[in-house]
Length: 153
Figure 1 (cartoon, helix red, strand yellow):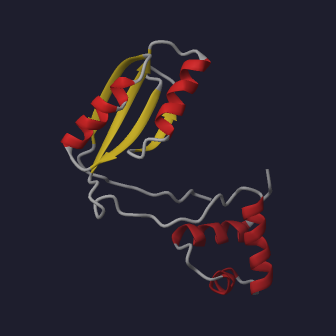
Figure 2 (cartoon, one colour; figure 1 turned 90 degrees about the vertical axis):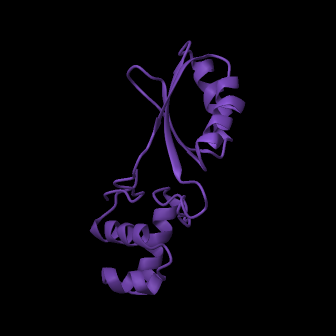
């Protein structure tokens, strides 16, 4: 893993706040000239610390206000069963996040949909059609108290 110093951390924090900042703007804020700042940013990308630059979209503004946290328990936890489940859900656009878990459940998913009817359709037409599921528990988020994708670097 690449060593990062305080300047790298400041660059990462600035990019996580606003990836549209120019190299010159970032350089000014971290006390470098543009060329060494650009080299650092390129090194952070090449080392895999910066994985991609994206636009964040407000889920409510695009008509997907409902977040559902879905706990999944598989009938068996063999490697091929885990891989089959991961492959199946990886292409489903409604699933924004999926975690392999410890404890009583095998997976935790965050699913976004337009409304309860859309979730019912997702549940019936996709999730319940998967082989090897032992249980599905859905919890609906009432309000989002905190959301960030910025890591505390």
